[in-house]
Amino acid sequence: MNYQVLGSKNKKEITELFTSVFTSSEGKEEGKLIGKLSSELASTIDNEETICFGLYENESLIGSIFFTRLQFKVPIQVYMLAPVAVSTKYQGKGIGQALINYGLNELKKSSVNVAITYGDPSFYSKVGFQVLSENVIQAPLTLSMPVGWLGQSLSGESIPAINERPTCVKEFNDPVYW
Ligand SMILES: CC(C)(COP(=O)(O)OP(=O)(O)OC[C@H]1O[C@@H](n2cnc3c(N)ncnc32)[C@H](O)[C@@H]1OP(=O)(O)O)[C@@H](O)C(=O)NCCC(=O)NCCS
Image 1: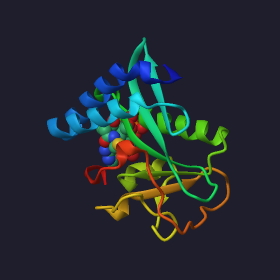
Image 2: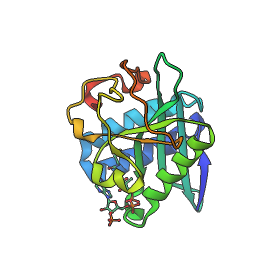
Image 3: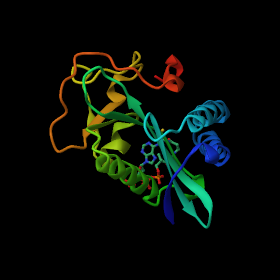
């Protein structure tokens, strides 16, 4: 298996992976929604605002993860992990955690300060995320499930409280994801 930095040229395989994984795990509608989101994100990968990594086995994409920048007026680098998918038949073998750890380590190498995600705390706590209060870092849109707002410092320092609402990339600027 090998990790690669993906770009817009990988849009088709990225879209197929996210569509099929989320259709299997969450149903047809969610598969369509996250497939569309992954396709839009893939079109805008620039390795600054939007970053994407892939994991290949025998030249087929079996895992992928996106990180997108949350933009603040203060100088701090904060990225949001979402979405992530591991091909259905490869799930439950530690690949998802390895892929997330790989991505977080790449961000660390680029001096990113904080990683955020929005999901199941019982899964994401396995890869270092903890519940994050919006008194510390606010979400760009209103959260329907505030217990799923999670963060971790990548700098070794504690996460600083930032007194402003960040903006997210335009692809996430829709209440349906929050
Ligand atoms: C979530 C996902 C990326 C994890 O990848 P994976 O390779 O299956 O996960 P790993 O094998 O590294 O880790 C498995 C552990 O996570 C837990 N886990 C896996 N998926 C989970 C989920 N959706 N919710 C909660 N826990 C989950 C398992 O119980 C397991 O715990 P254990 O190690 O204590 O037994 C993968 O299952 C997936 O693509 N799921 C469908 C899409 C999705 O839900 N993506 C995340 C939201 S964006």
